[in-house]
Image (cartoon, rainbow, N blue to C red; front, top):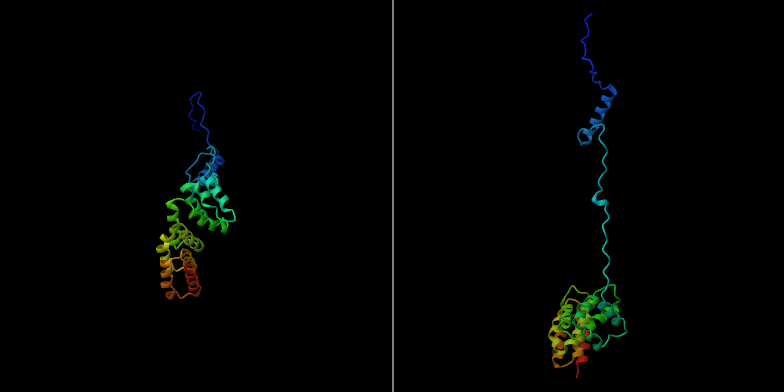
Length: 221
């Protein structure tokens, strides 16, 4: 029998991995490849999953707090009738956009919204008259706001409002045409009578014709 080669003294043989350990490592490597993460070591430590953006709570901004000017204006508008001109004079032109916003705020009672439009006629500021005219001429504004603006513009500008109001007698909004006819009638005067008489035969809606007749009655000297 041939003799076995001798090992150097003091050198231990390298350990041969067992079949079970090799199988376990191959199984782990296969799972890693299927998962798409590449080969991993059997002893690789588990890493914590970073939180996603969806898991981070988004702060909700607080609701806007109404300003003191709006609060004071609402206090005046809550009265049974529109506050006198002196009550609005102290606010200055800064109250004009506040009243315009309140006029179209559906969370405000209708009576207060209409008083907000009328109050614009009592604010001593050129912007008030310009705002009323913009309300009147804008077809996208609510019908009740435009109709109230017709009356308020007549109060604000007097006979200077005749030309602007006359143009609205041809508006598509029936309710507005009625309001304009009555607003013109309250102004009175020969010029108003001529405008109403000129429009009467051209109007074919009975309720608007009636408003024109009422306007003529109001305009009588």
